[in-house]
Image (cartoon, rainbow, N blue to C red; front, side, top):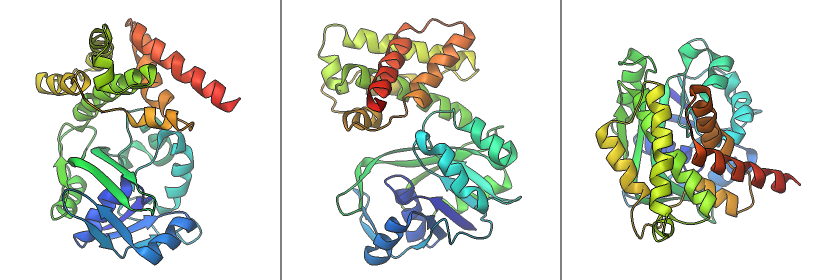
Length: 306
């Protein structure tokens, strides 16, 4: 199985690196500057699960040719259009596209570009970033990638992908319920992003305020109602896990969206909070906290763009 990874950043670089470390046939599609850095220094991973320094195969847009069995798409939502154009030459009739973006809004553009039959479901759980020298810094113990057929069940192609990941030094979940799992991650991520961006504070700081926990729980319930309307309400274990993260006293957790916002860059606000708010509106569900968080993020983008 030939696997193409878009980018060699904190997420795609980590999971692609773990595959390469395990001997899989992996190539990274990167920009020329990143390709040069990888050629000179290799792909470096620093992780509680073990460090790695790997010599990896790379291609750039002008050297990409042929079709690949699997294309793993890891990018920010605001780079999705550019990313689709970048991987398009690599996607053939028998290729499988595996997106591990946050949220759900990316499936429409991917289906339109490649056909729904080529795009399976995917998501990941990891807290990682790039260091000053381009190394991948894995910040905690969680490093899970999940994938499966969006229609449910398993297939020959998802089983083959599971076999490729089996020896890799990361947790793999080959899920027969991938869209249920994607919705459960989404109903955690949307209130985490909405609240930490709206309050410009960590979960623990929000919990230390008089109304922080109540507002957080209310925003979570808005998102859970949207998921339930779509037929994917969070199961009890997922609900407890999400609320545990969202209301943990003393927690330093923030959404990566807040970190993007504080750095003055673009955010995935429309893709995460905006999509959830619009789904609520289409379903006729009240979502006042989501609407407030979305207006806040939109106002930020208006100011950022001048």
